[in-house]
Length: 205
Image 1 (cartoon, rainbow, N blue to C red):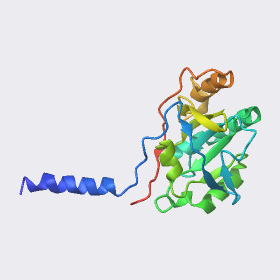
Image 2 (cartoon, helix red, strand yellow):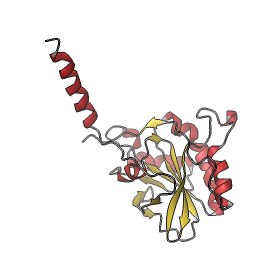
Image 3 (cartoon, rainbow, N blue to C red):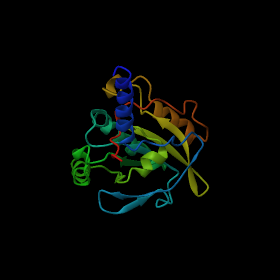
Image 4 (cartoon, rainbow, N blue to C red):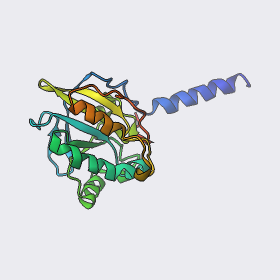
């Protein structure tokens, strides 16, 4: 019986782990990002290729419900205000399964975008395919894409800055430092940082 218990525990753990769809390895710096089409809160479909004037994008995987996402919400809005006019608009994507997090349902996304007056698209990744493709694991999780020919390559992955609780206590603005170099035509000297936030709520298999 003693030998059987560890075996049964292992089977149970395997069953729990296999019940969720896990992200793929995802993009690395320099990878070309595949285009996607996702539904915006206004009901229209949005793609990377749809904005011909974009020099790149700040793609943010975020949501309504995560405390970290809420803490970073104003900073994400400020990033769009600062960089959209320079050709790098924010595109926010909610990858959470509303069956797991009801507060991330499409109607709730619409309400949040309206209440907060989002000036950027807020897209629903209903199948979670885009999050898996990018390799996103957290909310928020950021990817800077830079135009290369007709497509976009990944130039930065990770966090906005070094303080997930209070914007006033930030010492290092990882994303803004990277953007300064990227917009100057240089590779970001720090192109990858650890995303800090809630784990994405994956669909059950």
